[in-house]
Length: 131
Image 1: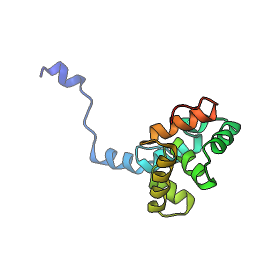
Image 2 (image 1 turned 90 degrees about the vertical axis):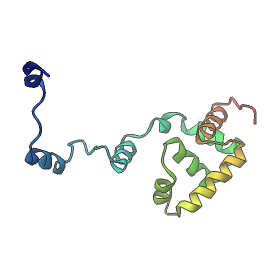
Image 3 (image 1 turned 180 degrees about the vertical axis):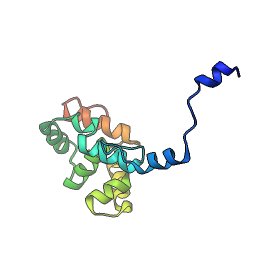
């Protein structure tokens, strides 16, 4: 490496500046941890939150014969929440959430979260796909 390349490199961080940076929280409450990501996503709403209007959710729930709890789980899947986060939010065990998800898959004849989202969207906007 030439002396010019060495002089253009950023200076290494000191131990003091590194520990100070790790103690400071970002001003927007963000961060790279999953919990911080979930918090910021919950506060602003995930993209899934905006895919269907209220009347489309009602139509999908009726057409797919979803119970109130199944609808809550489906909406949480739309918001890309994990089973453990859904469990915490609903005050039930993660195992119970997993059972609800499996039953939703069977009921809607899907095998993944993506397929579940697509089935609910197709039904909610009145474009029921093949089962």
